[in-house]
Length: 143
Image (cartoon, rainbow, N blue to C red):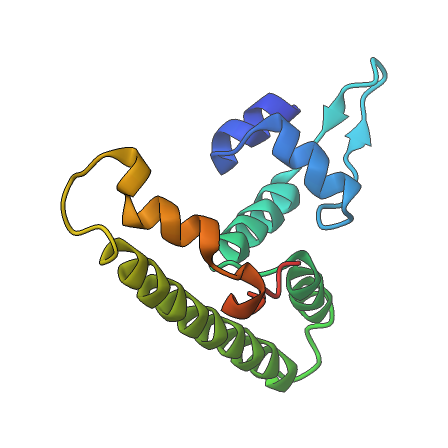
């Protein structure tokens, strides 16, 4: 199948497919004599797997690791469990960060409980005067 058909079946764009090929997540397609990419069902299955991992907010390195494990079916799934457990840890950290962010935004919102002139807006004053460094660095495993 050509790239457009693969994109349609996988519900993504041709650019996404090219990107995953470039990143080494999706194997390069064979080329037809007229130099069109030619994909098989294996590409579609792998692309769906990649997209499902991305829907779970997995980083490319995590997906690469899972793909490598899938390509070695004789190994046990302990490494898969470890990777998913580590990803759950990433999600837990992100939830804590987002909870902190919500508290900071709520505190900022309380500085201007009603509409007033912009020059007396507590939110704008708070944003202008706060020390963003004191808010703490936010992390994501995605980079």
